Image (cartoon, rainbow, N blue to C red):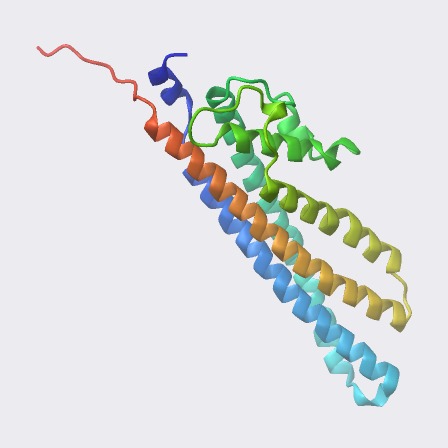
Length: 232
């Protein structure tokens, strides 16, 4: 493809990247706040187990209300962050196909479907992001993306995501019981899970910024396509 035509085919991604980074940052903040609320619940339950009369019913009701509200906020912000991230990923994948001469490991539909299809969602999304990462690097892209060097940052981010989403959330679901001891352990797991989610969101935001910066730099370096209009 002519370099000028390639420049025209590489679409800008700064706007979508900004939306993804902002929503991911908000989600990380929400999870940090949620970890504080869960830690508060741990202390309340421990006080009840030692001396039930030392805790007022109002304190329990306030923490329950705040935790319930935080849960709704987490779902809403996570949904916004997921939509923003996938919109950004779809755009940068299209750009990566223009920038990289080699084939990507997964076809375009898997950019979105790979996150939702059971089993393959454990590694398909990572491969998609990894190929986009390699295709977007400054300089000439590697001849064969599947054989390119793996990104340590993408690897760390993806494993943090898998641990947060699958391991900690599944453990929390298994711990759900009505007795106080189980609720205390559930709150402790939620503290760890929320902090892991906050770290995962921060890593995802950095991946977004790095790929965006690389693609925009390569786009700006390509000769721009211009049309010379006749002068009357």
